[in-house]
Image 1 (tube, rainbow, N blue to C red):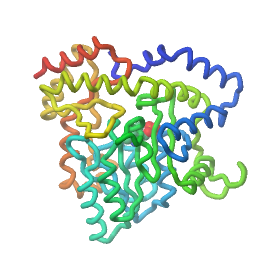
Image 2 (image 1 turned 45 degrees about the vertical axis):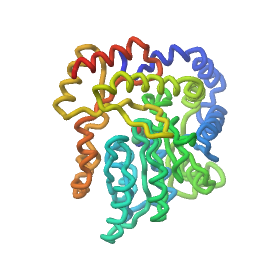
Image 3 (image 1 turned 90 degrees about the horizontal axis):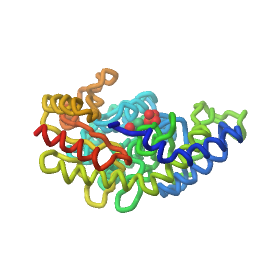
Length: 374
Ligand SMILES: *Cc1c(COP(=O)(O)O)cnc(C)c1O
């Protein structure tokens, strides 16, 4: 059994993907081909935003977004403590100081009340300039935007939604990657919608941000390619990846997202009696980038991982270290007293196989292996 079975997915979509790829090879428009434009339009339609720009990866997407708010040294950027490193790495790379905010224990996402506290603390100390809030839709569940947006409005701060894992999720029908002033996603192969290499995208309703990011992604271009008006990057999604993604997005819309939700529902029904299963608040839909259990402690987790491995059931720990415990960020550890939930989660979380091609037998096998552990 695979943790995420990309081979099975390719088998299901082989004809469609092969045809799309063959068309690109025949046209030889490897950069900026028609598929890139078609994909951006489909992505914007799917997420319900005015604009979408595809780029080289989800990390670049965050950097492009941060550049729109002129994030720099002396700025405070509020980032969830419990996330993948790139959410915090990108503001740090712009010279800003990451102010880590604790997680909500049951949704794994940023705690809106603690976000409010962190911002007011920074204002009170008066050393840093509060600039941007980065939210993350961890494991596929949109962050608590109704509450976060109130906090953002209270302090007049923009939101960058890091939807690298969240693509496909929603709150009361409004899609993930449409909640931020700018939202980002990643098409890394293991994400809910992945390509066959690296890829990413930014989403916004703001024309100015969109045009700025279009320029930044192509060496800060101005009126034409060899007119460079600012220092930018080379951050494009290539045509082959766009071709793959066109078919993957269609499959995701047609059945993969609902399959993911069916599987998660089965897991929760069977495992819920003995385990703390992931909470999906009323009105929220997750894209189930991960299905993550909360175990008692580190020892139990190690034991369960070992037992499941013996039965050939793969598991993963996302994430074993919160941001404030990362060596790269040690100097910001002075807020560790306020980051206890994320530190605790890092010791107790365990993710189990999740992808839309899991069979009924595989689901049963994962569940009985887990139930035998308690
Ligand atoms: C994967 C991921 C990223 C980075 O995406 P890449 O395409 O790998 O650069 C950023 N944030 C989160 C939360 C992620 O899971």
